[in-house]
Image (cartoon, rainbow over all chains, first blue to last red; front, side, top):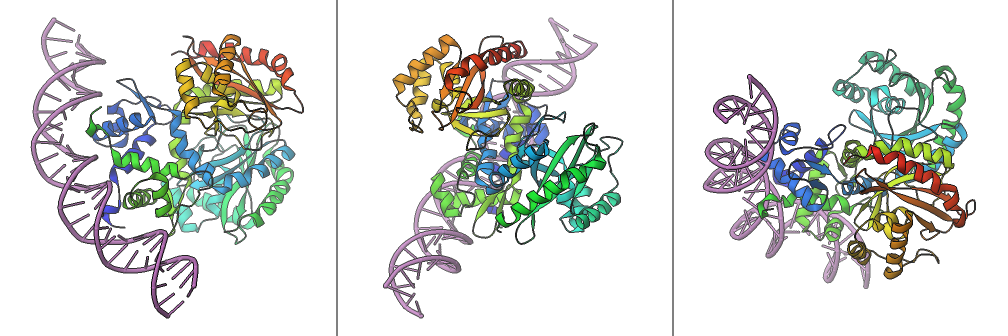
Length: 252
Length: 252
DNA sequence: GACATTTGTTCATATATCGCACAAAATGAA
DNA sequence: TTCATTTTGTGCGATATATGAACAAATGTC
C-alpha cells in the first residue's frame, strides 16, 4: 500500500471515537487529546466533525457519543452471517443447559462477544455483543488462542496485560502455553474462577467445514451451583453437539 | 462551526463503514462507491485505511468488516451510564413478567436498543444492543415520538418509510399523531402485531428527575400467550413500577 | 484578588487528500 | 478467441487539512 492510500484524518477520527470508553462518557477536547496523543487542534476538528454528523453531542465544553455511533458496530453485526447463524444454536444450547451461552471471536488480546443467549446474570459485568474480555483468562479466549500457531499465541500473551484477577488466575505465559496444548489435544477449555470469583465456564471451538476455527462458544455457570469439576460432564456433550451441528453450516 | 472545523476525510470514512450492513457483508470498491456516492478513489483510500488499521479485511477484491469495528459502538455502550443503569432493572422486570424486557432510545427514524433482558425468543429477528427498528411501528418508538414536540414527531414520520408490515400496521401520519396524543395522555403505548404477526408489546417512557424522556422501556410477549387486551393489566403496573424506580436515578 | 495552569481557539503555512482523467486489469458475452 | 463492459489502480493539479505557535478565555490555587 502506498503512503497516499492512507487517510490519516479518518484514522485519527477513529482513534478519537475509541478514546471514549469505560468511565469516559464525557470528554473535553484536552482530555481526548491526551488520550489519543493527538494535537488538540486535530482532536477538536474530529470531535466537531462527529458532532456535526450527529455521532456526538457537544455542550460547549464536553463531548458525548450519541446512540448513532452504534450504527458503526451494527454494520458488522448485521453484515456478518456468523452472529445470526450462531444465535439460534446458542438459544437452544442455553435452554438445554439452563445457563448462559455465548459466542466470541478474537480481536487482538481480547475476545469480543458476537452473540449471546443469557439465562440469568451470573457475572458482575453485563455482557452483550461487542463486549470484550481479556483472552488469556476467558474460556473462549483459551480456545481461540489454542487454535493459533504457538508463536502467535505467545506474541499475543506478550502484548496482554496478564492480571491476577483472582487467586486462581493463571498469569505465567509458559503455563498458559502448556494449557493451550491441552486444549488443542482435548478440544475444550475450562475456566474455574480465573476471571471473577464465583464464575466457571467451559468453551469449545467452532470450526468451519475446512477445519479452521472461526469462533468459540461457551457456557458459563455460577461456581456455587456447578463446581468446575462437574462442568465437563454436564456441559461438554451439549457443546460438542452444537459444535457438530454448526460445522457443516460454516462453508469457507 | 467554521468550514475548516470539519474533517471531510473522517466523515467520508464513517459513511463507508455504514455502507456495510444487512446483506452487504462483502463490498468491492466499486460497490462501496455506489452506495456512498463517493468517488472510487476516495472510497478505496478509506477502505485501505480501515484494512491497515485492522477494522477491515481485504482479499484483493472484497472488503469485510472485522470484529474490531465493534470497538466503536462499544465505546458508546461502555461509556454511557444509561445502559448499565437500566440493565438490572430490565433483568428484574423481565423476571417478574416472565417476558423479554428492553430499553431503547431514538436515532432518527429508528429506535436503537441499548439494553435488553430476554426470556425467550418471540420475534423472528434477533435483538441486541445496537439493533434498530422503525420507530413508528414499535411500542418504544411510539413512546419516544410522543415525547417530542408534535412538529418534530411529524417531521420524523415524514422521513420514515411507513411500511405496512402486517394488516394491523398503522401507516397514516395523522392517525399516528393522534395515537401519540393518547400515549402522552395515558403514559403508555401498546403495539398489537403491527411489526410482526404474533408479537405484542407495551412500553412506557423513562423520564429523568427533570421530567425529560431519556429512553423507553418495554415488555414484549407472543400474542398467542398474551392477547393485546391483557397487556395493559398484566404489564403496565410492572412497567410503571420500574419507571418510578428509575426516575430518581436519572439526574440530568 | 492575583498568579499560575490549563484549556479552547485562531492563524499561516507546509503537507496531505480529493477527484478527475486516463491506464491497466479483470470480467463476461458472443 | 475477440471485443465490449466493468472494475481497479495511478499521476497530477486544485483543494482541503494538520501542525505548532500565539493568543484568549477559563479554571484552579494560594
